[in-house]
Image (cartoon, rainbow over the protein chains, first blue to last red):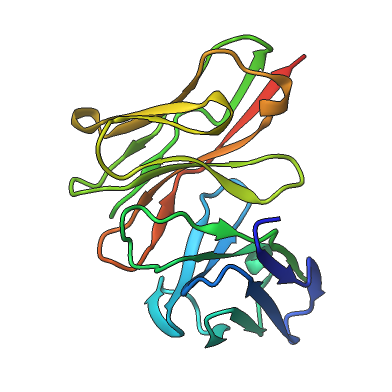
Length: 116
Length: 114
């Protein structure tokens, strides 16, 4: 356990569905991240939030919509996804999130998403 | 664009063998470097990191890595691996700017045979 939880752990959805992924951190951190891990590809950063404000959007398609209501919770809203969006979606958190002194990021277990 | 390259995608070793996993990055500025590990069925977790000072960094479970600035490298080493080291290993570097962005390599799968 790293103090970062993600739900659901597995999700199967059709291309016309709308679903949301949830991440919660119990570490008192101020930065949260969404990553995508596809087979045979490097882990890709999607979004960064610092103190609830989005500070990085790594050219992610608008069918992925993040939400950070407070420093402990992060959501990823999904709509009209494509089969190539099937992947493991990882959430992470860190203390400050501003690249200070090589901050450690703490990862959740991920949500395995399959888009049919 | 900044990138991280891990040369070995799949490594198979016998117990007690020495390990070295290669990692090179492309960014020429000040960097913070990391090795993360993912054991089977577990979360991605930090193994070790470099952000300043001694370029030889020691991490958990007997791992170490050496930052060689002139070679843009941060290779991971362990003198004697154990079966429990079987895992996937990821090298990462802080992206430019001050957003906490991490850029990861493709990962190396290490299989240690008992």
